[in-house]
Amino acid sequence: MSTNAACIFCKIVKGEIPSLKLFESSSVFAFLDIQPLSRGHALVIPKHHAPTLTTLPDEHLSEILPVVKKLAIASGAENFNVLQNNGRIAHQQVDHVHFHMIPKPNEKEGLGVGWPAGATDMEKLKELHQEMQAKL
Ligand code: AMP
Ligand code: ZN
Image (cartoon, rainbow, N blue to C red):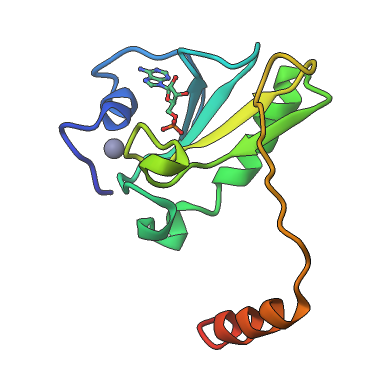
């Protein structure tokens, strides 16, 4: 299990800084977000330190979504978003992989989403489809 002494979420996992823990297993830790976008906003993290989703080995990912689901149910939220940010311009502030579960109780509270949808261009999409499929 990789850990980083300077990482705030690794410190939370180790109990070196306090958190409002919601769930813990051998590979996963979940706690309330300290600056919530809405009531019930919570974070699920792998105990293994990795800065981003693409740098986290698969075996540390398998339990994450079931825990996100448990949190959503426990929050009582009918509407909610699951968010996972990677990189500064994608709004990642803490460099330890984390999944947000953010209840959306009304238009104002919870996650606000900008969705700048592009026009459908089937030629470009087909090219991209080939390119990505070749890498999978
Ligand atoms: P992100 O922008 O995706 O990196 O989100 C980081 C989240 O971590 C933010 O929503 C913060 O409010 C939250 N956060 C930062 N420090 C703590 C902490 N000590 N306890 C709980 N949540 C935290
Ligand atoms: Zn960490």
